[in-house]
Image (cartoon, rainbow, N blue to C red; front, side, top):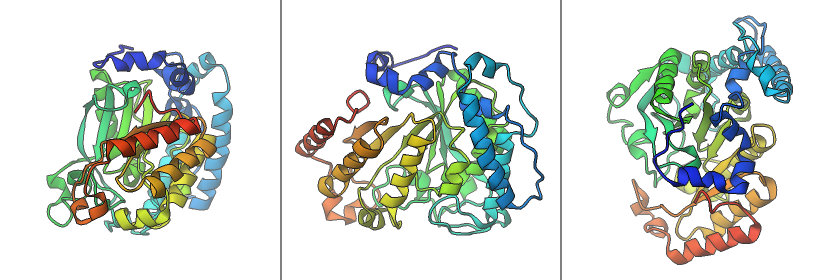
Length: 370
């Protein structure tokens, strides 16, 4: 494939031994030596009926996950010769996702809205998915650029400091979603991804808003995608264990947020319950059961070093040793943050220094991507 880069660090980052070691499978896809996981999944045959109860399909999903992961341990040349099955692992996951839409439980809000019949939960997204923009993003972490970034409308969070509030929040109750984004089905989304690949993208980056409300469309689009391209999940990670099961084997790279080091701050600033418990659980699962190639983004917030940043760093060091972090100092008051005096400023240089020294003490790899 053509390896197009526009920032020098996009090349130099790979000279770092830890980065090369921790993201060796991602690099293998870039170099054409390994297959993207979703392409392997297409070769896993599944026999089921659309009328099968969801419990039966969930049981089959677990069975096929085991089969899939055994395949990954085989020689990569053998994987390239496997035949795409008409009804496969991806078809199964999409079918389950659509059944979940009848009482939506994609995220841990578990609104139970029947999105198939037009009902909407907190995210205000029905069965349809909407893309607000799709382009080559040059501002992502160096090893990810140029990134084929797809921004989905809607979000399951309500962060008072949201920097993408025009996508996730500002339109709610003011505009029709059709006025601010393009409705896409699975085939159209696949077409968008292939066009990004043609332009030079080295990964397909699902973001938003958040991609969680759009799991069914994203998984379904994999049936029609053809390029050997890294699939990247860029999310707040507040999804249920069942919905994570629908994507865990298909994503090559994980780019999760880790916002708060406790549940209380998650409730205060994002309006959600059990933040740390849920997100920590999901991070642990993709680390242990998924590709394990993870870059955790942590946005350092002013006056939240002790309650949020240090507990997150402690957790990463203990439970997610393969992960790399991007410790971000770009926080600035946005949206409704001006109403909260304690976060109505950017973090100071002293705060950022304290955070980075603490991360270094714990042995966390962050400097190449921060």
